[in-house]
Amino acid sequence: MNQFFNIKRFGQLLSYDLKINYKQYLIAVGICFIVSFVLTYIIFIDSVYDFDFRQYGVPFVMSFFLFVVFAGLSFPAFSSKKNTITYLTLPASTFEKYTAEFIIRIIFGGILFLVIFWLAANCAAKANVFLYNLVHDSNYSIKYFSYSPIVNRLLNPDLSDYDTPNRIRAMGRITIPLVVFPTLLVFAFSVRLFFRRFAIVKTAAVAIGIILILIWFIATFAEDFLAYYWDTLRMAIVFNRYVIVICAIFCVTLLLTGYYKLKEKKI
Image (tube, rainbow, N blue to C red; front, side, top):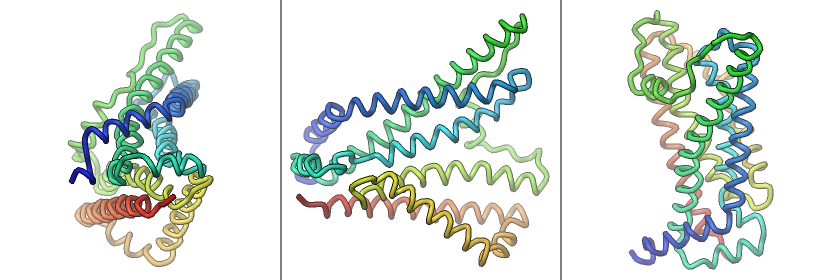
């Protein structure tokens, strides 16, 4: 058990990673803040006076892809032979290395992304509203970005005000973030281990290829099947559950595959 996981050794590995890669992490934080700020600011330019809270969704989704890229840049040591040798000879088990990278890239990275976007979006909103009031000599205010309504919507979706077709679409808007976002992160994190140089580019190419194949398959073979499952609310609920289960199995498979791929790497 001590060879598989040791808390002291694991802490030292995390400390080593932060010491070696802290500049990369700081750059990632800066880029994420700037991009999130700019995207939110641009959304505000033409819609300060009639801004809808849901419009925060556009810069959030676009900024989220930076988080996916950050996940895809995991195991940076494998980008060069010298760093690969150093990394593989570290006194830590494969499980500790894999878990440490997952915690830093996905867990800590995810928390940091949410905080950065919240700060950037609200800074952009305040800056835009300030300039708008300054130019128009007004006292206009808006609803600033918060995760509370999003969490409430996801945990307690109230679809009673929708008719059946719109209720089905609303369910889809709830299911997609819960399923697609984690799947993209796990895919970028795990598939990266199959490549050495230009791993993020190759991972993105694989992802695009899979998406295109899925689109072709759905358009060619699954159109009637999807139409059947999205015809009624009950069928849509069943379909959503299928999608969640399939994506969960896919994510677990990717994580296990990535782990064994890391285990196979030798000097």
